[in-house]
Length: 268
Image (cartoon, rainbow, N blue to C red; front, side, top):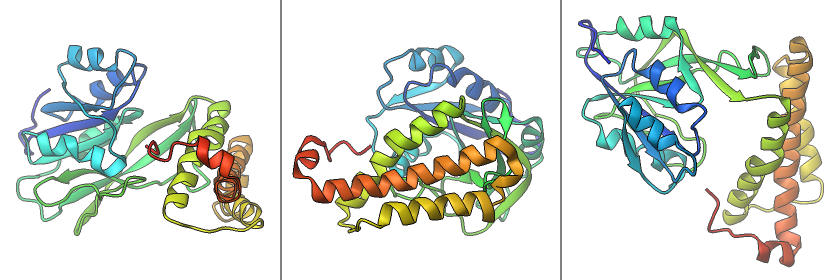
């Protein structure tokens, strides 16, 4: 880890849960531009923490608080003003490293910098379905900005962000099976629980309508049809996720036995 003479030092932060397969590659990537590494772990049962410590990262053990609150733990403990936040399955490209190294962070008017994200299934980069360019604000001034406190899909709300002409890589799904199992499993269940706790009401038509809309948006309007089988699969997965999210919510509303067996205190 070394600091470029052209910029201020950066703290890299990653939140983890059972990321032993990813954490080392993520930290190697971040160490190219970061002068401090912090891993915020929410109770990994594998050796994620041991691998992170062996690489030189400081590990903070924190039970999961939800996306935004969890991602704010590391920046609050950071030594440096500027924070680079990546997920464990994300990596900086050579272009991203060069773009960050070229920044003059000590006197920039910007409070955050966004990078395009390449989303992968296996080793296949999916460029349609709204998956690219998927700008994500990852580098920010922690003294001025932080992640929103929302517990799902949190982001940094910068006032004067800058989009860098560089990408990060996101190895979000190992294969097509994982694409569908995540959509049909914890993603849709968590979303259904959140909606139920917020008091959202749906009817028998809601699952079909939302499922069809999600598929059509990805496949037609975001041109998934131009990405072959992967584009069709991403679109179908989005439809399945939306359908099950509303179907599960409807089930919570209608079936007290199912509702009683669900632990709504463990949404996250």
